[in-house]
Length: 316
Image (cartoon, rainbow, N blue to C red; front, side, top):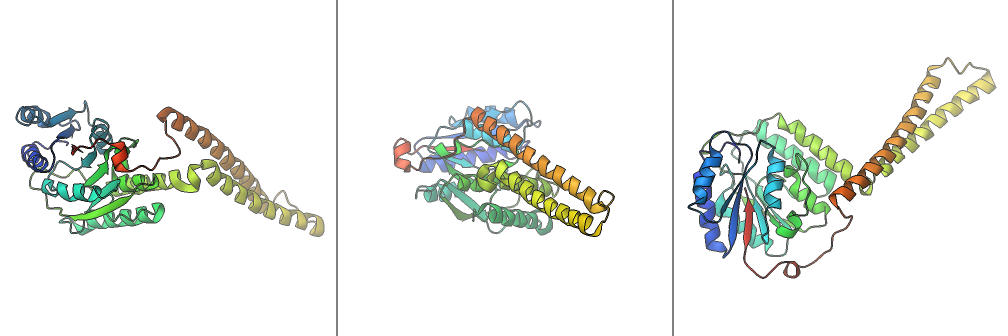
């Protein structure tokens, strides 16, 4: 939540009521992302009435990805349901996600098939972003953002970067996780104001581009830039061969011709791309070592990895 003082009381009441009916053990983690309207004070007040409510206030506004990451990392339950705190994700539909993920999936996505928002400023950019994500990652989930339920152990393995809160299904898909989706409703806001705008569309496309780059060529930057370097080298060599042929057969001056200058630029670019590939390869190894990220994931059944309880953990 960020400045959701008008929604927080109803949100906590409805979520607690739903989880009380479907789970013998649960917690409600509400991450406050630097609110300035008294949301944190209300959360601490509500925690006295709701013993399963855990406010998690951040010291400043860090953004949705950081807030989501904090909530997930503070969870310990079998399932983690992530949702916005503005009540556009309907708490009464949490059981839909829980029932679906119990069939053996690592992630269940809520598909907002009918959205009550502006077509040009919200729905169309979302449709384009989802299409591009499906095309670049192979993940066939139709609605990448919003209401989600994740298998807890998998969720806590994620290392979310800024902007990746929109890419949860694609991230789980790249880990080899099994995905499903259920249709959920998406009513208009009843209070407060949206924090989203058309300006974020470019950010989403850049996040998708970064994810594609990370996944391309088996996550080996050297493979990508090495191929670019090789093609540039071959093209430059072909142009240089033509210039040398003209020089020795027709006695055409080579040094003053524009193609010769272009060939030098091409050779230097080839060297630059190859060097960039080596540098990114080293940085990738350092990142994996620091984050303890492994290049594999063990497939296990849910029953083997979690206690036999009915606990549900959610992060708002």
